[in-house]
Length: 114
Length: 111
Image (cartoon, rainbow over all chains, first blue to last red; front, side):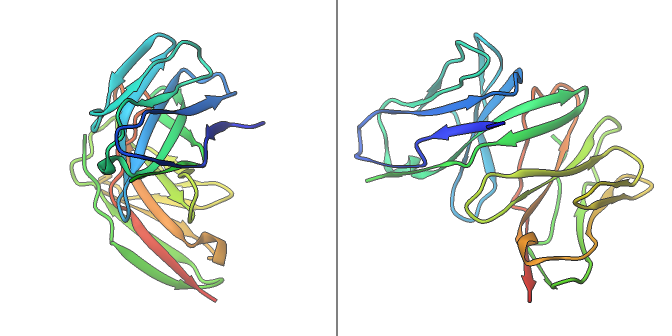
């Protein structure tokens, strides 16, 4: 059981380049989220999705786009990378049991923008 | 969202119990208390959750104060593998799977 798979694990971009961070889950979860984690900080929510075709912004959405065409996949797009987007990115797939939330996280993508 | 307060860091010796505190004085009646941990260079992983009663699972125990304004994650016998950042998170209402992370507690385990 793969759980949540993120690719790539590492990426270096030049300022202004675009790229897509991939996230796939095989648990048939409705909810998926993208977080970023800067050094010494907790995770901050970028975008989230409550199901195929439905996405919404989190705390730090600027500079990022998402889409959810299938239940399994939730890619994160950087349209024009900036050094401020250097961070570790985590994708999460969440199972909601009423008010209790159990999230499963990928291993992360370490992105450096130079 | 209700806020949590945790110590920045704690230390323990291997095979000793560890009590990680969390204050959440503005918790609402429907908020669950979750604990996640993040091992070095990994994504966070679920540890335990509770609402009102104390909870035990294979990883840890969660002790919740009677007024629910604080809780304690208990690792009964710390191992080197338990060295991680521990996050105490509240979630309730319509969260849509979102979690709000604070800075957490960095746990160091000495051999």
